[in-house]
Structures are given as C-alpha cells and as structure tokens.
Amino acid sequence: MSAPPLQIILVTRDQTPTIHQAYQEVHDALSGQPAADLVASGLTDAIDLEQLDADLVIVVGGDGAILRACRQLGSRQIPILGINLGRLGFLADLTLAEFHQQVDAIAGRDYRVIEHLMFECIHHRADGTQDQFLGLNEVALLSAGALKMIDIQLTIGDEDVTSFSGDGLIIATPVGSTAHSLSAGGPILRQDLRAFVVTPVCPHTLTNRPIVDRADCSYGLAMTEVPQGTHLVIDGQIKRPFQQGDRVEVRPASATFQLARLTGFSYYSTLQKKLDWGRDPRYRRN
View (cartoon, rainbow, N blue to C red):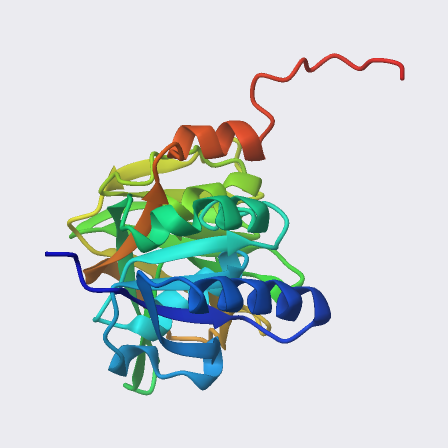
C-alpha cells in the first residue's frame, strides 16, 4: 500500500520579483508532483500557520523568513525546509537548483527531522504588565539609540552571575549562535545542543567573555539605570523599548524547532559552505 501524499504548506516572505519568481517555480514543481499535496500557499503573514495541519512547511526566502514562520507556528511546530534566496542561510541551506534536483526525494519523505531548542522571552515591565515572545535565535538587550554604554546584570537560575558593561548582551540558542552572537565574537554551538550562549556586545572589560550554560533554567536580565533608547530585540525582528524598572526572563520553550534536512546535507557541511572553511586563506593574485 503506497503512502499518502506528503501534505505541504508553501510560504514566502514577500513578493519582490526575485522571491516571487522562485516561489512560483517551487509552487509549480510541487503542484506537478503526484506524491505531494499543497495544503496552503502564499505570504507568511497572510497564512495562519498555527491553525493548519501538514507534514512539512517549505519556506522560500532566507533564515529571516524561517524565523518568522517558526514563530507563527507557535506551539504546533511542523518540520520546516528552507530554500535559500538570502545571503548566508544557515537554516535555509537548500538552493533553488538543489530543490529542483531533490523534489522527488522531498515528496518521498527522504529527509530527517532534527529538533532544536527554542526559547520563551518574558518582558516584565515596571508597571506590572508583561509580554511573552516565542523565539528561535536570540534575545538581545542593546543600547541601540541610547548611544552610550549600558550595565546589564545577569542571573542564571537563582544565582547572580555578573554585570556586563558595554553596548549590550545577547542570549542565543545553538541555532542563534551563528547569527548576531557570532558577529559579536561568540562561539559556534552545534545546533542540536540543549544550551544557551551569553555573549557581551563590545564589552568595556576585556575579561567579560562569552558563557555557555545549560538550557534547563531561566536567564534574567536587569538594569539599575536605563538610558532612553535602550531596546529589547527578539530574533532581530521584534523590537520593544526597555525602560527603567523593566526586566527580562529567558527560558527554554516547550516547543522545539523542527528542521528538515535532506540526505547529504548536514550542519557541518553547511558551515563549510557558508563560512568557506577549508579554503586557502592566503591572498592570491588573479
């Protein structure tokens, strides 16, 4: 007895000409695939992903589009496969050409699903109200428009860790370790680890170095003095003013991000390709 068609949701981040052309190619290829069935398709913001049932979500765009789709899936995470049209694409590591080569394998369920840590970020305001966000990459508390150094107190569990002085502080998941945290000098973590990395941004004290700690506890951020312009940023896409008396709590989410990887694709092969590992670093004349 043959397996039922693979139920697929196809989403894209916008309708710019390049993105729309690629989206249409993917749409046509999946529509002509007898082993696949398109449940829904369109712009990410126009589809209520949390209310749909499917076996796989295919995202046309870059890592930012995957972050958006992942958050919109909420507690009902579905495996995501990304087709990269962005710049780096650590999550969306499949090119459009590779998708056309692999479309039969995708429809035939020839992929594995790897679960990754997600977080909940709770913004406790001084007036007693709070906002809660689901995220995948990182939480960053940044001086931003303040244009001055800020001091951030970090607690892990019930323990006071230290105070960081500089332009900000990042708490990243292993998936987020190759994003803002990496550019700030943080380490690369294997994506399926259960850990957080705490990375200071331009620390004033050279002894303040990145910290890697376990993910089964809460991380707290607070400030005694908050200059105007300080912001809380989640996944580089959600930005909220951070004001005097506010505090932030970051903890592991019950939901996990599910990344679909095809046979022959792996985390280290992606790093080798995206970071040019193994290439001769010496400059050469043409």
